[in-house]
Length: 163
Image (cartoon, rainbow, N blue to C red; front, side, top):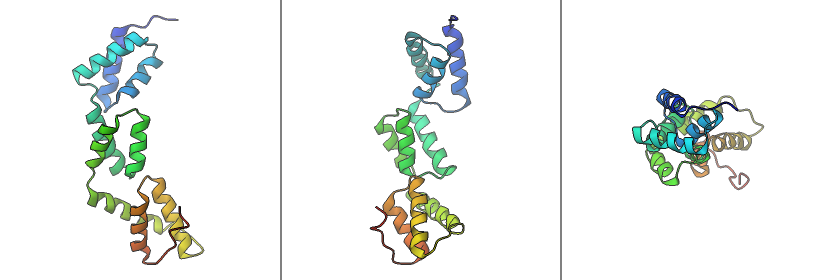
């Protein structure tokens, strides 16, 4: 096995972090793949944190903003993805609180309006169910999805069949 130089790994990791916001788990995965030992890994991560290359609060805010604005994900999906990256729950909650509630509802409503044009169903209840599955699959809260779909379709639907 070839010898891995800690100095080169540090600079490689710093360059990796300079491209865009990264969290600790992403950087660890990258340097371990390049052959870093546990001791090297700890030293490199400590140095990157100290120098500000890695900041999980900044990463969390950036991740939430990007996934909400560009991918149009809901809070549930964003929370799940951040938990997969081993971000502490307190940071996740704080970052998710930064989402403007009006913008959140507007994104959901616009997304459902766009999807409504492509959804085909045998009945209005079928269309309702398909829109519901679509929006909850994107990570939006069920109660908010039901409220938005009801206002979009302007009908009375059986929501007991959804659960």
